[in-house]
Length: 331
Image (cartoon, rainbow, N blue to C red; front, side, top):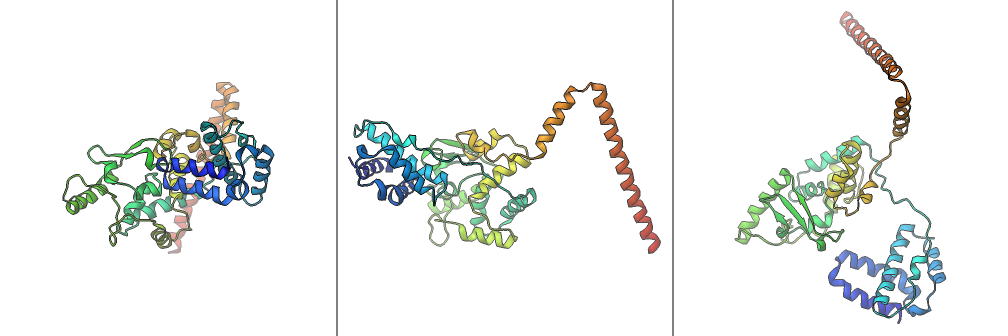
């Protein structure tokens, strides 16, 4: 059986079970990369070396992570073919070697700049958009917010439900909402009740006032927000990175709590946001060395350090007083 036939059968069966974005991604990978090379070939005629050369060629113009994603689609086809008895050999795609790559997320904005982005989002005043951005600041993905429906909200218990079909983790998730979000949603609820003449409104929460349909994108208002705040351009999705990086590295919130907030099913995904600070190495070694010293020596060293700090403070205070005195004499 040809690879093309297997893919078409597989994707038609999976379409109702996966998100539209996942469907489009898989189809794109197949049509743009897999089909031109292997679409017309029978699965039994393809060997490991064919896939390794295929991967090597793609690495010239694509990042290893992209190539890996394309190979995952191919590997899935082999699993499906084996399940349907179209193929009885090994999943040779898994033999392909790729160069190691760093999957860590480097969010290099300074803490002060991170605060400016957060304050700009909180201070944005354009109707509806300001509330969408506020929801994004809860760690939600853009698609999760734009697709949000009343059926997913429990205002009485302040709970947001994200069914497996509406989130990337493919698991049913729930999050307790902040008071700020609950108050905002309560206003939308009152409007929805009036419009639908029902205390149990349905449909999307955030509607375009002109079309009364959900928003397809919010890139333009996001760019307006950045421009008004005088901030460098940043992707909307980076709001999630901002939340994770700031909470973990600046506020010291545990990775476990941040992981749940973002809806990660694996904590290692969240650990990519942990920034290793250079001074950590010195702190660790100094702590180890201090533990080996007699308590008396450690006490004396700390006392000497305290005296140095006190002397520095005294010198600074005297300099300030002399400056004030000089200013009075001049005036």
